[in-house]
Amino acid sequence: MTTATRPTIGVVGLGHMGGAMAGHLLAAGYPVHGMNRTRPRAEELIAHGLHWHDTPRGVAEAADVVITSLPDDDTLHAAASGPAGVLSGLRAGTAWLEMSTVSPAASQELAARVRATGAALLDAPVSGSVPQVRAGSLTIMVGGDADAYRRVEPVLRELGTPTHVGSNGQGLVLKLAINISLAVQMLAFAEGLLLAAQSGIDRELALEVMANSPIGSPMLKARAPLVLDLPDEAWFTLALVQKDVELARDVAGRLGVPLPTADRADEVLRHARDLGYEGRDLAALFQVLAEMTEHRRTAA
Image 1 (cartoon, rainbow, N blue to C red):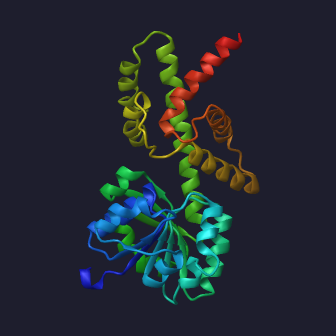
Image 2: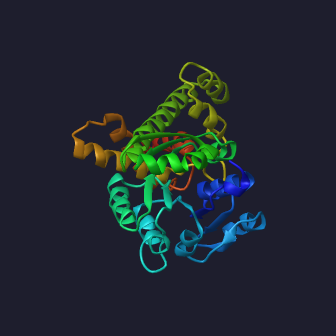
Image 3: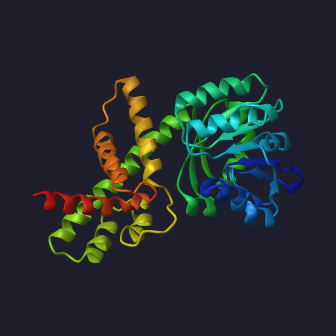
């Protein structure tokens, strides 16, 4: 695809993930328009060529492909609706890649509203974080119209490896299925590391051996350096992890599917929130369990 034929991209939500996507697409030569609730977060992108708009509608009006990357159902609804929303700016033929992790039901309802405009919405949540965006190595699960998917597949391939998995909402269900394992793996790793450290084994040694053992998935290997040295800016906050686990439990409840490990992870994530860790990275589960251990000893 030459620069002349590349579609114009509009990105609504220039936070960690949306901003990284916009930056990656700018670097790949795409014309990119965007907006965020606060402009200062976008200044670096603007300096690198992003065309700023004050409203989601302005972004949608300028774009052939709209990308939204937003934290939850309520924020998505606010960005989509009203005279300044994305829906007001869509044209027939526009493709909307909704790359947030929201409830499948909210995505399906929004997809129906988008179809009424002649545009198409695809739920396209991702597995991976900012490093994977920058490397163009996200795993992208896509639900929605197959023809619309084929039109936007080249854009998605700039960001990673997309797979069309079914109808609207099914990309999100698969993402939630993945995030159950994300939370449970990190929790189990933190449990094992704490057990080793509390027995007197050097925790850095235990961390290295565990991460390089057969349990060391790519996710655990990537996060292992963060466990004992948490980053100031989270790749994936515990608040968002809990939101995704709860969404998965909601879907499972409607389908009658038991999620015993997700249920337990949700309990620990609630403790993490009560201890003030909601804004810290998923790797903070080790510290959460360590605090829970101290509280238990104090109570005894």
